[in-house]
Image (cartoon, rainbow over all chains, first blue to last red; front, top):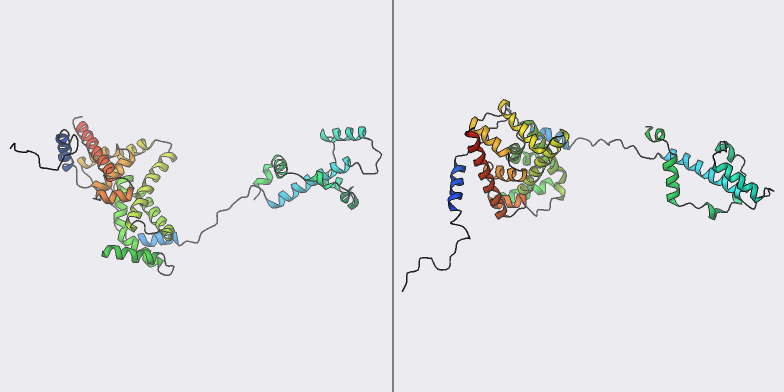
Length: 165
Length: 186
């Protein structure tokens, strides 16, 4: 019976013997690496570390100043201007008023306003609007999409307003 | 078994409002040196290591309530320290507008004149060699070589397979050996 050289049932990983010398070489090299890193620390460095850490973690949290992109009071002012403009235009366009302005004249007025020639202060403009005028408004046509209001505010809010503390 | 019980009790105390401060002091006292040296071996400079060590403990303090005990406490902390070290280096490189390799080169070149480096020429060469390794590999090498973690512990800390870690470590040894050999003949 031929003598078996290998121990029954065991096997070695592939290339184990092929790579053995290289691995041994680097293992020996590693043995020659310096044992320590060479770093040192200041004297008593660790002594008060806990106190320093606790001072940080237990410090009252200071709220960082948050500058909102839009100030509520300014939004209100700009929204009021936007609403006044809309109401003003609606009144001019309102077919149920008792004015005798015919459609051609209305179109002329629209074009005049659209071209930015209306030099009225909006607050002055609203002084011409009565409660009756407001109640006669067709509110359906005044419904604006949020996106339209946002777009107006973005285009008409100055940086000065935004940057005020 | 005792270590496990101790840790569990420490975690319970850390998660209890009245006991948190004292437990935190105990935690810092137990782990400060191990974590410091793990971090220092990565960032090299003492002041930087101090920053990262503080960040690590602060993170532990602030997140201890969400620690579920899925890993051991010390495993979790070593992992935080490892991540904080690498994040610190990346941020420092970005702030200085340099690559992380350039950052490491500068840090290593400053070692010779660093009052908190007392190594000889061989140790300096060794640090230069380690600095050439990619970050993850450098982390694996320094944690295995200097901190003497087992591969099983490292596997849990770094969430990498033992086989992957062994391979990375052996490649690191090879690179360091070649670097030292090349530079000693210059």
